[in-house]
Length: 268
Image: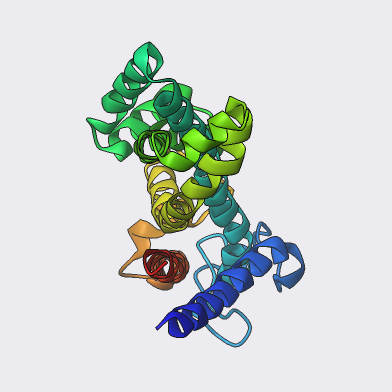
């Protein structure tokens, strides 16, 4: 069973790595300039020349999908990495120090967790009004509490265990105990949560852009592309289906990878 899970992780990891490679090399892989407009080529259906067709401005959709991968994927990775880092550090100190520090941090996290994250993200993005940067910051602000809760609960369980007491007796300071004993025991659950969160963050970034609170024109972000093409669903469906398919496949790969990692960690 473990070998099967490892094979799945390897397979989905290769797919995820390929997506990252495509995103990183989008400028070199795109057959056309993703921002070059040519109204004579407006709304062409998929063909050998334009694999995914063109949009209302005659821009090649395949080139824009590749260019948008860099924005969508790396923005989601940035949100997850920052949320995991901030939340884990907050949770460690909350659980380790307890007392007033724990009370204040957990009450703050309770406020964020009391409402759907997307609602808070929309509110923050609307206040910030700074395009993609605002969307990323908003999602970080609403995503860190779950990592803080996860880390805090784990720290509270670990800090009273015999090996921590033994580490104290040997003269290890707080930072050394956290680095040597706490963080390694948090890593598994945090990584699983983070990997599973990538797809969610990608959907939420696309959602904010779809609502006009994320990427701004002419940025080739997948959610913004879907928003711009929603009025042409019946007349030129490829304009909205192309970025929708890109989001679906990317989120699917991320979720399958996260699920494989979770099962492997659960099996020890």
